Length: 73
Image 1 (cartoon, helix red, strand yellow):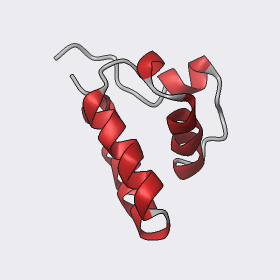
Image 2 (cartoon, helix red, strand yellow):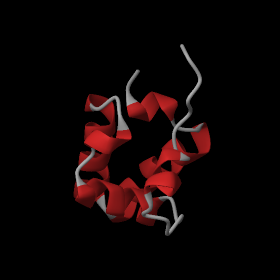
Image 3 (cartoon, helix red, strand yellow):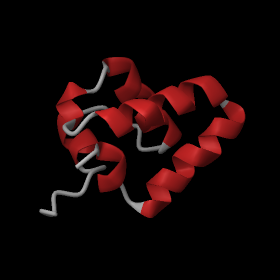
Image 4 (tube, helix red, strand yellow):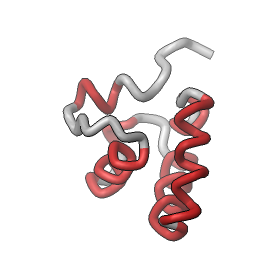
């Protein structure tokens, strides 16, 4: 399952809203989340932007991991 699908609806909405102010980088981030199934395969710049747009400020592996559901589908 793609990472974007494992995010909460609120986080997906926040990323869509980020496109208004940051159309290029927010779109690229969402494209990568649509292509990747494991967060550890994300580029570091994507992780940085993700934590900025979601206002978590937590770049740690644990912080990034918490952004995605681990339920089996």
